[in-house]
Image (cartoon, rainbow over all chains, first blue to last red):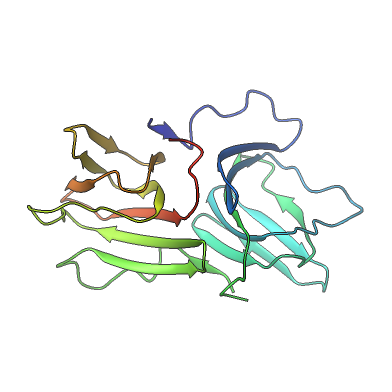
Length: 111
Length: 111
């Protein structure tokens, strides 16, 4: 079945919206829609799985525990190894930011 | 390291260009750039792994062995289970088509 990642966008934007597009034992493909949202001020994402993430529309900044900040604009992609603590420090408040994230298990090649 | 999927495009477009962005035991993430290319007239892709594919720019048509044709425009995504024979029947000759493909092993959920 054909679907479109830029359609069926969430009607309300009071929080980030996660949609699982596909999931099995090894991978999970997710669409994340943000509208100026950030992660909660305290705490970090500390994920069991590696994540490959790309911004398809909008812009967002990821903050790592070591202080590194990476801003992703349209088309930018990044690899986040499992247990590399991070959070979303900023997303563009003036438009939707659409992320595509591929979470996967096993040894990451691009660490 | 931050990279951009719309940059470092292949300088010549006499054939489809495949770039592996990430690969491990379970998954392979690939960028495919087409410029009016199609699969060879004879033969089918008969893949050992499942494929989740999205068109990020341009447009392309996938033909399945059962005669089904699916045209993907920007943002459209499709799941192709392992061993579902298919080929690329058409891509837009007037601009680049950029596909993002996630190949993965294991039982596909969305068959």
